[in-house]
Image (cartoon, rainbow, N blue to C red; front, side, top):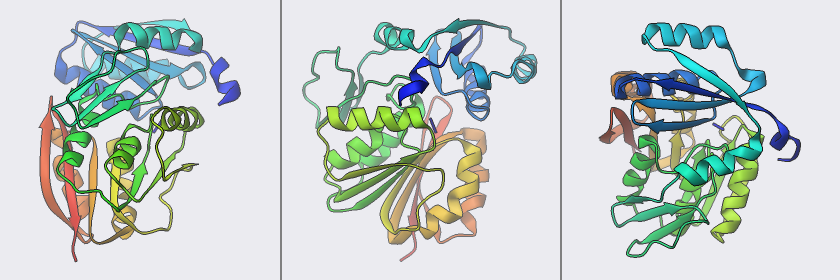
Length: 280
């Protein structure tokens, strides 16, 4: 999960790793996400990752790059440069004719059911990464009208916005990062969404939902799948992503001791999304 006020003045490290393949990039994103990196840009044979200076751990990065036989460079950037960076690299994303995600500096996208405005800042979730794309693909197949939806680790708020646009009766979104909370709040206002409650929190609430969206990393999912299952009403659904193809069995094992049953699995660029259904 990914930030208000004084955090905008925090200095960030931009980590650049070049001459890497897609599998290496996937491994590094998952590993860096687990140690506090809050933004990623995948380019041709290159990965850029962003982390607050206070969370930069060069020894861990050295170890990860040694495992992948790659090298990295760093530069220090003030957050004021972040939006400029996004404006040069963030193009609109379309998930078939179902949803389009664009920033306010892009022209409107036509011929889609749902258009979502996202100004991402340092938060995760623009649709560019395979996991967000997969989550939206899974949502496309569901009827969310009048459903109570929980967005666990909302990031930019993109999935919460989409759930609202799809007719959810209510959406409860949380993140454990102050910057993400402010960013999601701004994006909710941009999209004029209704019935979304946003809260800074780390743990799922003791509430019941018809559906849960969880695009986080593998370790968080493995920890919270039992709690997320308990938060679902009978016949409810849980969509998860944020993990690689080789992690599939771990997720299925975590769900095996709950009332969750496997619905379907989607794959994109080595990343997976799983839809679980709760037994009636």
